[in-house]
Image (cartoon, rainbow, N blue to C red; front, side, top):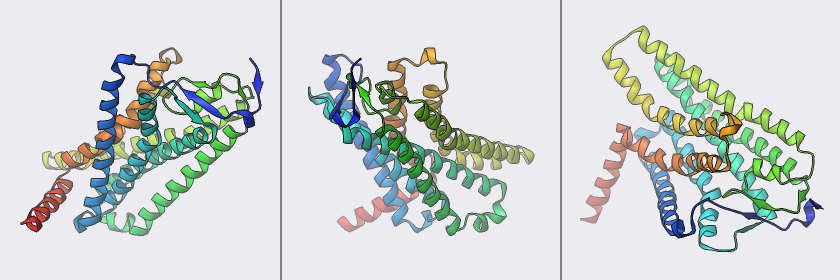
Length: 313
């Protein structure tokens, strides 16, 4: 294949979703509704936490940041995907593609760290309840969130800088609905061994290590619950951790299916489906999971609606 210097690459062509042309309108409407639900639902969570003083706790502090991250995460890929579904010109500029890759990696990793911080918060609340206010102080919560932002920024920047140094072949067609890092590396004519090594190393740091921390946290929670078994204690733990466990299952289930299953199962269609789950489906479901399963959030929503009703009279 003809080699081209990266400076001559003006744009990439995104193939998008592998769906029939006659179904484009149906899927466009479906994904548009899902995206709007994601944005409005997560913004509602941020609003409720901001307005209700009862929600000014470490758990909801992390949740507000997770909601903001989910909105941003979906906004990196979904709007461009929707535009491409309605146009024949499905290209994305080189700079836009690199930027999309950066923000996708950034918010994906940030999601992982925030979910881990929430698991640690639940571990302290259940396993060390008497020391909870001391361990999960405001300064500790801010440090955990700030550290998450800093680490993910560095990781995403490292990936992006290594990607920007590559040269690409004549074929600039990306078989995906966004500029996926793995798909872009396959189009490169340069040596990508360093990129692959960084992907493996950063993947351990941002995905595997946080996931192991979550397993350890919930392992300790389970041990604590069953050490002093009581129906009331189990129900309280499930109500406290159930929402978070649902998010963990959805998010890491999709990632494990995409990156850790045998390569024979990782067809392009499977990769796209897994990507849709954790970029579109999971961020959309988070508001429902946390509002429908959480009495504090439902109480805050009722108070907000009652205020609106009273003010309108």
